[in-house]
Amino acid sequence: MKDMDNIPEVMRELGENARAAAAVLAFTPAEAKRLALEAAADAVWEKREEILAANGKDMEFGREKGLTDAMLDRLRLDEARIEGIVAGLRAVAAQTDPVGQVIAEWDMPTGLNIRRVRTPLGVVGVIYESRPNVTADAGALCLKSGNAVILRGGSESFHSSGAIHACLVEGLRVAGLPEAAIQRVPTRDRAAVSEMLGMVEHIDVIVPRGGKGLVGLVQREARVPVFAHLEGICHIYVGADADPAMAVEVVLNAKTRRTGICGAMECLLIDSAFRARHGDAVVEALVAAGVEVRGAGALSAIEGVVEARPEDFGTEFLDMICAARIVDGVEEAVEHIRTYGSSHTEAIITADDAAAAYFFDRLDSAILMRNASTQFADGGEFGMGAEIGIATGKMHARGPVGAEQLTSFKYLVVGKGALRA
Image (cartoon, rainbow, N blue to C red; front, side, top):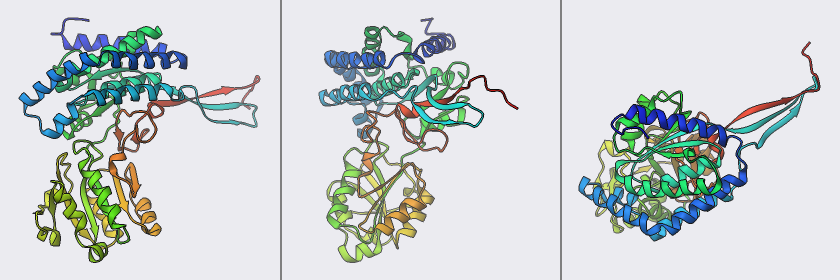
């Protein structure tokens, strides 16, 4: 690696090495990729004490930096979370290899047989903030899909990400694959991010995973295509026919299980008919759980509720805070979400099939749910083993981005001396 004072040269070398590795990965057998991920999982578990020690340094750095409790929770590793990283690596390893899968096949009257097959994107750049597990998730998914990856973790997770990355490289060695298949930017210097965003000759797509500031920066300045979501402003609408006990349980889970993730509920919409029948149990349960509910209109009169300001709607709090208001019917709920949502994840709690169908048909967020917590907005929970992020755009990938979403396709055309008239 070149002198760390020369960031452009460092990034150029990473890019060249990644491009060379991608050429090998494009035809790497599925078994070799599986072996690399299994070996990486073994290494993570064997070196868990080293990873936890590295994470301790990052937690100290985060506290000194003044990170919120929710951000520190994103950063923190313990043995259970390392077990989750290991399980994620093994789950991705066990998945069917997407590369070379035939998406469609047909014959033409001219005698041509045409197949559309999955092929890797090439080189993926991943820019993320405090969650060190993204190092493993992104590295595993890119390898599984035949892509080389350049990882640029946040300054907060520098040591943790480095320790996890070393385990991924060990897995590559065991499988005899290029170590440059999974590279990590070895500096906290933010100049490396700016360089990545312009590496059009070396990187095929950038995936930013973090807060509004990071994702907004990437979307504004990247010359490389981007898979991204700007914010996770997730709504739950408690419909007129919702089961009250279910509503309480789902809303509490969606808000309080982990407040710092993009699938956490940020706005609660309660149907006026539901409130007339069942009262304010849902809001009261949130208040009792320690959530600062910022309620509009009649909800602001509930004990413990803070009166909402206009700017509370459309805000990603990532904390024990949520906005809440009453709506008259599913139509008004949908209109509110269209106005304030971020096209990430929305849920409806209802026993009414017609209301659920209206909600699903009229909204175009990447993920729509019925009678389920928005915290399920996660690639692992979708059976993908892990995810590299949640994409809310409409081009190429959308929703949880797993190994399959990190592929493109090419056409394989076979004839028997076919000539065009």
